[in-house]
Amino acid sequence: MTPYGNWKYFLIILLILLPMMWTVRRRSIGWEWIVFATVVMLIVQYRTVMQITTHAHWPELLAVGVFALFQWGLVKLALGRRIPSGALLIIPLGLIPLLVAKFLPLLAPQSKFGFTGISYVTFRALDVLWAVTDGLLLEVGLMDLLVFLFFFPTISSGPVDRFRRFKAEWRQPRDKAKFWADFDSGLHPVMIGLLYKFVLDTILERHIHPPAQAMTGAFGTICQAYVYSAHLFFDFAGYSSFAVGVSRWFGISTPANFNFPWAAQNIRDFWNRWHMSLSFWFRDHVYSRFLIAAIKRKWFKKRETAGNLAYFVSFGLMGLWHGITWFYVLYGIYHATLFVIFDAFTRWKKRRPQTFAAPVWKWSAHLLTVHAVIFGFWLFSGNAGKTAEKTDKVEYDLDIDPMVLKK
Image 1 (cartoon, rainbow, N blue to C red):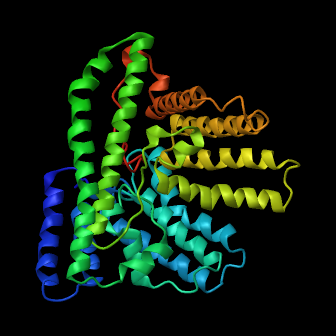
Image 2 (image 1 turned 90 degrees about the vertical axis):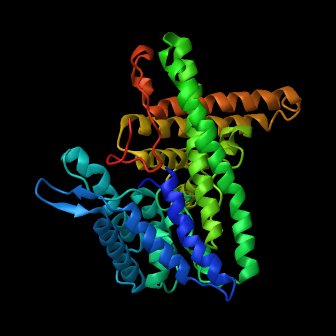
Image 3 (image 1 turned 180 degrees about the vertical axis):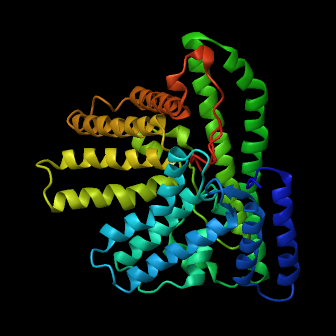
């Protein structure tokens, strides 16, 4: 069952919430309800059977269990200091299930391994492993790890939470006042999700997308890029808003994923507003680590060179994370290039502060950013390699990997 995809999914959530509402009238409720809800929703979401090889078929839920045991073993190894090279070895090992899930269908098209949401769950697992290898975590409980990895509101579409923040919150008991305060604060993002996903995105899909797809030539391509960008936002922001709201109902303050991205004044500002949990994850775990290592070990003569290469490493990996296809890689390279250009322009602009003080520059920067982003989404859609006359509809899947990509 697709999370937040139909009324049945919300009905199951309601059936879990109702006994919680009844219980909290008499006494405080604790972490047991989060565990119960997560187990129920895992069973609901991962009922399907997948083909591992021609003769081997696994329940998707079994793949979830294998992944959990594998990551728990890596955490124990890291905690036991049994791997002397630390993150240099432990992080690549943590990527193995995701790499198998993405590359196996390319090598054997009839074979699949993994589960919906493995990309997001892997990044949560890597966050734990990095915290352990950095010495920020001296112990990790099995229950803490499992609930963090598979907390059901965020398992398939994010946001990508951080273990230390989650661990400090999920075991906190909630009395009647706290429960209803959480329920109230969760209603707003859930309503926003309903508006985005089931109203605005539905209008786009039914009444605006078909005529845009029928257009040909350069103008048709431009219209399709605008429509696709709007669909991408309403679809993804809708799912993310659902995840944030439902998390609040279960007492978890999952970080927001969007903060008015179309109001961005530049490309850096955009990535501080769009898919924030993912962009901040790459900033902290890839960009910053690469830059610090490059400067500390003097890999390059200029700091700007290290910073520019760090952009290409970060966005290149982000592109591959979305899927092993050329247009995702191109999308990553494109955004890295935008960052390099923006940084160079920022340094140049500092020497001319008065020139760019006028309001017209602010609006020009905003319009340029919006259209640069829309062009990037056009690359992301995969339609850049097709003619306008033959453009197919490409739907954005929240956990884009070979087994669940929809075209």
